[in-house]
Image (cartoon, rainbow, N blue to C red; front, top):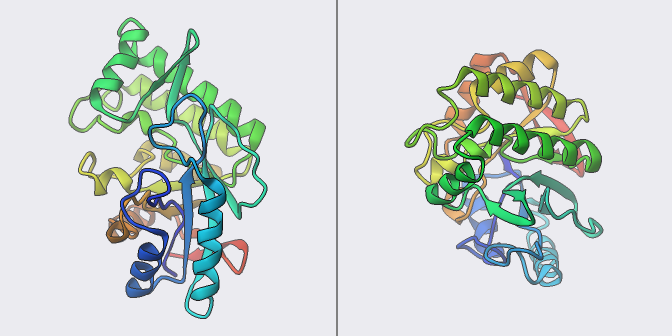
Length: 265
């Protein structure tokens, strides 16, 4: 089964329209496609949706137009710092893109320079920053219970080029500990290939250490592209499937016929 539920369009910071994404999904043989525009955040307008009503209306339009060819879902990527009114959405993908320190929101993934700024706020102590990041993210996850947990260790986005975290065994142990805490709520963890598409990483989120721990804990995972263009809705899926099989996963989760269902890899 071929699906993707982490998809951005021109309603937020994506480059393709809703219909362009659907046409790409049809060309690639998708069974289902889910849209997950960035939910509104009052403290940062740079990439969130400003017209969620229009977004939902457009998805309803294309869903009706292509209902015989593909399943289409209207989801939202909710930021942990700004929980939403979830009515009207088929699913919620919960992510954390910010630190909130002394009443200031610091984006962690918009650029390497922003990551440097975040670390500097913690006096250069990247491990303490990671502790705060995961602690607040897990509080959100266990309070609001999103259907899907987005790019759990997003703060490692630039690590392959500018090491901050993954070379540190203490960091990897910290990430595993908090991932297991997050898994207790039953949300599905996405295996996110978005940073591969944008040239920042060669492997998906979360890191393999976290995936091994999630497998042992019986957590469920799904493949997501975190796509910002119609051409990348299945980016590096073959490689991600191979990684999951090597770790021991035998299935991934798909939203199909309105139900989150495990399907064999």
